[in-house]
Length: 519
Image (tube, rainbow, N blue to C red; front, top):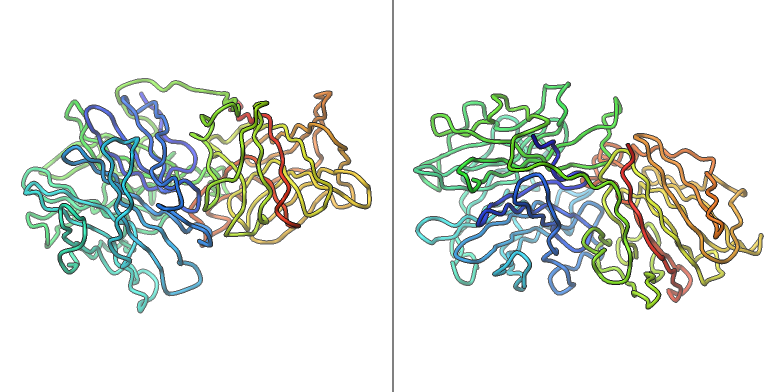
């Protein structure tokens, strides 16, 4: 049995396909760069990261994008020897009736690329997908956003647009084929042709605890679409004891042995606070067919904590990242634009100081997902600068308004470098150590974050490697959609960061980074 989630930590909006016996999942990455996370597996249990397709500024430039903007709900398909990736780059969505949601398609002969320059399709809504019909015609599917409406009615329905099969440019006017169920807020469409029916799966109910994966079908691609007898294939709404909550937004595919599967997002709250610092994760369930309708094999739309796949999960407890080459980048991301760094001959990572923790333009950090409720992250940093506006350290963040930063900076009153904690909770800034920031002098400084469920603490060591716990407990639950609501869709990340608010000339050298699962 394989335990869910199969992709732990921030892995929302899964689009899953199976090609020649290999499963691939594409996930949203929002403001994190490079864009679109792709994972592959032979057995549905063990997944490895594939290089992200949107890895340069010519393909994706999110500078200035709002928090939780950027890449929303990609769709991965395969047809006639080509992988097709459809994605949205969301430029505007908060504090406004409007959403600027630009939709594109890129293709590649291999899941590892090279990927073509993205083709722009439209901006009428988000969560786009691509459908390849049996007659060779191609159709673009996306939800429509209606700024004139209020609340759920802004999600006005699912649009279908035919594309030229070669240029991928639209060749028809969009047709509204589905307005959703009573749950409302219809989005995340995927279209399939199975036997005589076209099946449309959509996400409904928002992104939190009322979420659902809805199914409808029609014998005509333009509809009308008949709603599933249960309306939803997957949902944990009304099931307070469910292990996997928030279940919804997903896709379906057939495995090499003929079995059918659905990959869907879910959330696992820490405690009664119902906050999920791991973000929305990806789980899988087997699907069976009755009367030409899909159902979860377990007999309920509430997904199970486990399923029977094709293998057993191998648990890796320690990730020890070195900087001799670029291999570490498989697990690390930056914000909105590529990280600015060099790999040094001594095996260190030199991270250059850029804009502040509040910037949506040119921050500089390399961070990885928090994938476990209990973990330890550790690094070693050496600084070369003496100015309070230059700093570097270990960052633990959700977004610009919710984060913790164990940073080193120069204190001109004490005449040396000092270690302190910067906190942001819903935009409220604090420095809890105050005048008691810790003098650390020069040389290598070791930084550690230990998280056990809702509580976390920082510690440090000098070159003698004697660890000292900093007497300040952090509440990890603030790094969650629920705390940032309604402004967040991501999850907690931990990693290395450097700022220079004086003249952008400074840098910090990191000699390693470790992430360890704690029992």
